[in-house]
Image 1 (cartoon, rainbow, N blue to C red):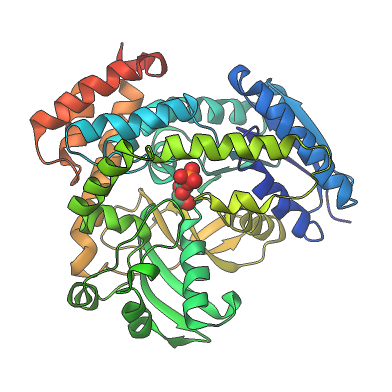
Image 2 (image 1 turned 90 degrees about the horizontal axis):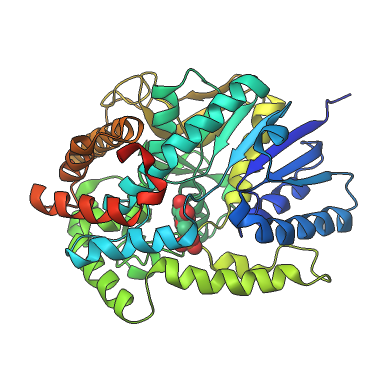
Length: 437
Ligand code: G6P
C-alpha cells in the first residue's frame, strides 16, 4: 500500500491556493494526500480562514478524505511533512506595489521579479526562506522544499548556496505556460509538445521545440513575431518580436524577455499603466478582493475560473505533477530550478538554473544542454551574476553589495541611479529588511 502524504504549504492563505487544491484533487489517485497543512502569518489570518474553508469544501465535494489543518504555527505544520511548498509574499501586496512604483520614478522598470523589484523581493524573502529551511532540517529533514516564491531562481540559488538542504526545487509556471501556449498555436495536444528549456528563472529559453519528436522551432519563431502570441502569461503584455531579431536569435524567448529586449517600450508602458489603471500589484489587489469575495461563498466548492486572470495560471499542474513525479519516481521530463551540475556549460556547476530535468525519487536530474548559443549566453551569465550578488547582499545585509547587484543588472543604466533606487527602496521596505539596519 502507498504511504499517505503530509504536505505543508507556507503562505497557505494565498489567493493562488485553490490552484494547488485543484491539482491535488486531479492527481489524488497517484498522490494520496492525507494531511494538508496551510500556514500563514498573523496578517494573513483572515485570508487563511477563507481559503482553508474553501479547501475543506473542495475536498469534500471531490469525496476525498484529506484533512485540512489551518495554523499560524509554522513549526507545528512542518513537523513530519513529506513536502513543503512555499508561496509567501513578505510585506504582502503593498510591498509589491512599492517594488513596482519606486523604480519608475527613475525611469527604470518597476516589476516584481526583474530589476530593482526582483532585487528587493529577494532581499526580503531570502532570510525568511533560509529560516524555513533551518526549521525543516530539524522538523522534517527528509522533506522536499518546492518553492514558488519569487524571485524563484534567486531563492533557489540562496538555498543551494547558503544552506546544506539539498532537497529543494524552484518552480515557475512560465515554462508550462509556454508549452501550453505553443501547443495551442500549433493546434496539438499539450502532451505532444516538448521544449528543451535552458537558462534561469524568468530568463529561460526554449532551445528547441518538438512535436512528436520533430522540431517545429522555425514555425514557432514565426508565430512569435505576432504581438498576440509573444507572451504566454497574463501579467506580461508582450509586444511582438521584430522578425529579423527573433529569427537570428534562433531560440524561443520567454515572456519576461520583453523586459530585456524591449526595455524602453515596457518601461513606457509601465509608467503609463501606473498613471492610469495602476501598477500590476494595484490591479491584482482588486482582483484579489473579488476572488476572496467568491472564496467566502459557502456554496463555492471548486476553483473559480476568475483565478485564471492571474499570471500564475497552471501553477497547480506544474506543482502537483512535480510532487507526484518525485513521489512516484516517474522519471519524466519537467523544467524546474535546480543545481546546474554541468547541464548548462556556460553557467557554474553549483548555481541554480531553470532547465529540463528528469524527475526522480532523488529529485531532478538535469538533462545535458551544453553551451547556450552565443546570442543569449552573455545575458544569462550577467543575470546569474546579479542573482549571486543579490543573494550575498540578502544574507549579509551589505549595502555596497546591494548597490553593486543593481548596477550590474542590465535594466539599470547607471551606478548613481542604482544607488538612489537602493536608498529609497531600503527606506520604503525598512520594516522587512532588518539585516540592513
Ligand atoms: C507569472 C510568473 C509568476 C508571477 C505571476 C504574477 O506567472 O511566472 O512568477 O508570480 O506571473 O501574476 P500576478 O497575477 O500576481 O501578476
